[in-house]
Image (cartoon, rainbow, N blue to C red; front, side, top):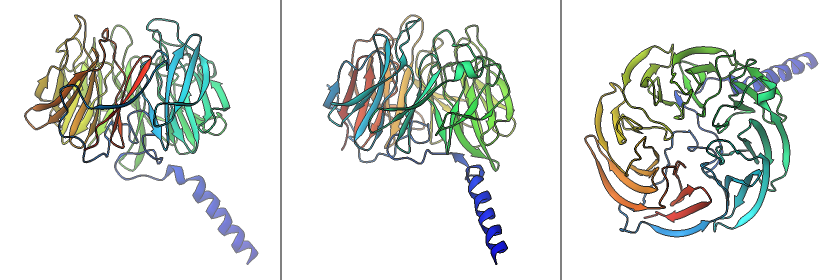
Length: 418
């Protein structure tokens, strides 16, 4: 009896240790945390589950609930969990993580290393919330674990040093990914393109083979073909690794003269889309093996795409300076729409989707709500948030009838509930 009990306990331990490796159902894998716990939402697809929102806006825009000022310079987006909004900003010499209540009032703030003083100064990364802790990487590649209730540091690690990596020209910009007990980072070093850290200690769990330098995107996690896969970009590639082992599965070309890829990959229907400006444009690849399905001239930059109802919505950069709707299966451009007065060089738009509508923030500070269809998009509301100098690049967040918009020192919260 004792031996049988021992065997049973051993089997239970083995089962629990492999729970993270169990294949999930097909599709994007959501972070099992409440509300809007990470960049671009639970599945990193920028799609909100909100319903019953305002069908149109008045000319001046929706009602402003509150705004928080002096949060520091930057482009990072807020995350929202429970009664707290978390957002980062560069203030003087520090990257500061702010915790705000639902009136925009400060609860606490914590320093997460040095601010970025190089080209385009400002905070890049959004935090991710998991089991009461916040995780974020600063512009210099130092990863922090911070208590979400108090702002106290739990641990920090310089992953650039650990993986022999160099900070790229415009700083580390990755919003980190949680996968169960692991924290996924993409340092792009000679000791690993991507790595999984133990989120409790910061110790390395696995690292993938080296590939190229880091660029300016964040990873996504999805299940396909009985395997859990993480996709992200290097300065020269789109790539996929096995989420459980870190084994590099395939790479695709994604190179431009500047090593700049800013649009996070998009997954859907067994395929992954990668896109960059100043280079190959966009292409859809099979998730099984990285074989190409179609290519497009779409050249999105800072605004990542949204896949909904068989259409990919993404902004053109230098070529068209418009928001495009592409057929996901064929790559055919169904229609396009110009939202803002583009700069002479490029244009960008960041979006969140909810209740069948797109909520867009264009880089000139224009905010618009669109009702997209199969053949066109209807503008249901439009206003000017700020007179931005072509750098309103923050991604909108929509939760509990509230639309959060950020431009550098200020975070606005608008009431869009029906």
